[in-house]
Image (cartoon, rainbow, N blue to C red; front, side, top):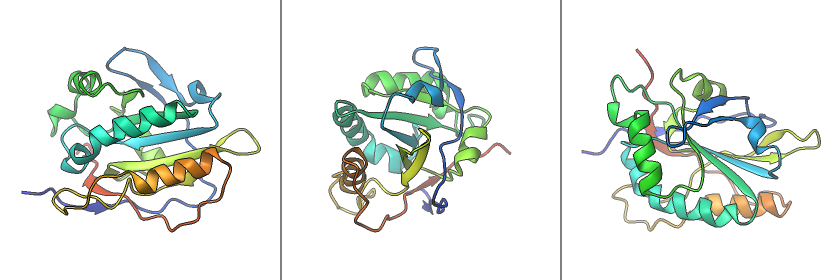
Length: 191
């Protein structure tokens, strides 16, 4: 059985990355938005361990983020799911997942779900690509899908949409294509 699909909502132009302070279960380190101050661009991904849409992409997410880290992109992933209903999305399992997939980015735990709400995230996976603006703040550049591949649609995973957006942001170019929204499982909110 395939999980119910949910499409990400549009976030308004000019949206700035909200401040956050979240733990990384793998290392115990607390991360904030300021930790990425030196980066020209920041990719924020809302993912989790159990979602079939994330499972479909997770190896390619690891590959893509590792590749672009060498080019100056900072990346983080955040899991905001309730562990009451989805215990496998809890911190100890997140640490195992990060280690197993050799994530080159911090995989952070949003227990209160306040960070997901501040970003207006609604599904997993959901991708936000921010660029530095004139005030040295992270401004939303791309809020769209990884690519056209979905579980069972037989479209190969390429990361085409997201990688094209990252290339544009790192090269100071405008985005020359329509941003298709992310599709995935709903974030599992606390009851």
